[in-house]
Structures are given as C-alpha cells and as structure tokens.
Length: 193
Figure 1: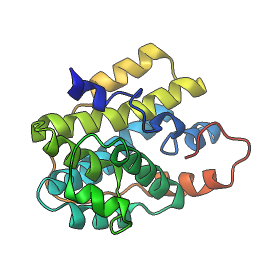
Figure 2: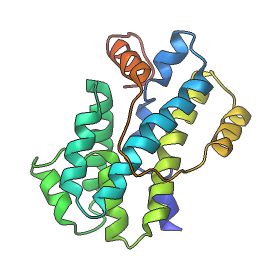
Figure 3: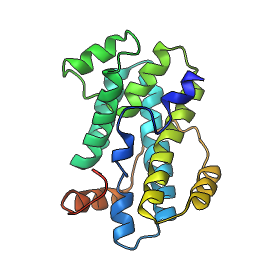
Figure 4: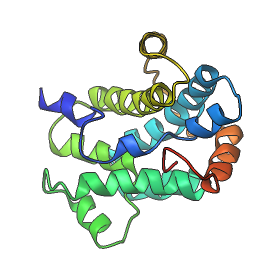
C-alpha cells in the first residue's frame, strides 16, 4: 500500500499549495476542464513523464532538461519545492538525492519521484502512472477547491484521462506559461502557482 501513498495528495511534499496555473485560468474565465486536459497531455505526458522515464537511467540529464523546460519561475519553484521535499523525507539512500541536497542538481518532482521509485523497487510503469495521477489530481483538486468544478466533474475528468506512454520529449503549452507568469503577480491568490 505504501506505493499508493507516494502519489497521494496527502503525501507531505506541499502539492496542495500549487495549482499549475489552474487558478489563473479560472480567474480569467478559461474553461478549466479543457485547460487541465491540455496541460495533462502537452506538459505532463509529453514532458514530465518522458523525463521521469529517463531518470530511471540518467537522473542528472533528465533533471537538467526538465528544469529548463519549466519556463516560468512559479512552475520551476513548484517542481523543485515538491522534489526537494521528497528528498528531505530521507525515504531511501540514493546518490542522486545527495546531489540535490548539495545543490548540484535542481531536484524536479518527476525526476526525484522516479528515482525514489527505483530505489524502492517500484515498477517503472507503476511509477509513471503514479506521477501522472499525482500531477493530474493536483490540478483537479485545485479546480475543486476554487469551485471551478465539483467532485463528480473532477472524478469524471480523471477517469477520462489515462496514462499514455510517450517517448519524445516535447512539452508545449504556452497558455500555461502565460497564465503562470500572470499568476506570479496576482494578489490575493489561493495557490502559490
């Protein structure tokens, strides 16, 4: 059961503090369900999960590439804060985690989670599905907390979107980048991103 806890929103890494620009999309009248679908397919599937997969064999390269793909300060900080929080839970001995602690690698969430899975002998496919679920549910629960959708809509959305294996790194969602940048200056706000 422990492997399911790793991907739960209650896992103590602060994921509940972030919306991945869902808050700004909602504030600007953008269809939140369609926004979440686009981020899931274009950023999580084509970006985060491709680098998480690479992290099973080359975490330093994956971390460097993934960090560079996070265009805005908010999106970079979200990924790094969550990743570093995992590292400091000290759940296993992992050489890459030591590099993150020393500041030699940023420690993005998908890369750190992939290394944790490898260290804990969690199957790669299960790990990638877990990361996909974790990032998707983070956005869905943010939308629910904002009142943009209800729980039933959220569950339907999560059932509709499934893990898809992608091998080419091609994250692209300029709308999320623009909204994230606008959100950096929003006051008041519910979420840090």
